[in-house]
Amino acid sequence: MAMAQKYSVAAWWSSGKAGLAKSASAPNAIHFTAPAAFGGVEGRWTPEDLLLCSLASCYTTTFHALAGYSKFEYADLEVEVEGLVHKIDSGYSFNEITIRPTLTICNEERPRALRLLQKAKAVCLVSRALSVEQKFEPHLQVSNAQPKLSEAVSGK
Image (cartoon, rainbow, N blue to C red):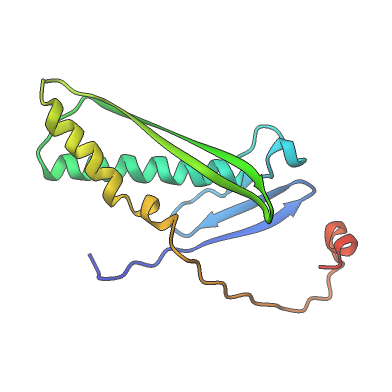
């Protein structure tokens, strides 16, 4: 594997209350919306869901890789991730995220299984990234298209 890997996702607001996100590494776009509590559409992924899904899927793939490397056999791994969002002075923020892996093992290697579960948490790329300072590189471009209603009202 190369020393650096680059990943990229593009998202855009596609219509009234929904948007699309696409990655070059996946053939299908993901339809997303704001949470229903903020006027979003029921039955669609939200950014909050996608963040928690990213963490759950990263933890799962990390554990699978560690188990393979360690020649540790297991029957099943299910990872539930729950996040609590609260209102703070500057808006809304996740103030707690809980990762709940449920590992089904075929033998009595409980101490080893627990060590691998803990190691997966320690080296999970997404888990470690959540506290990383983010770069912000805004770009503007001018278009002759009519502004969307939200842009016209808010002046964006």
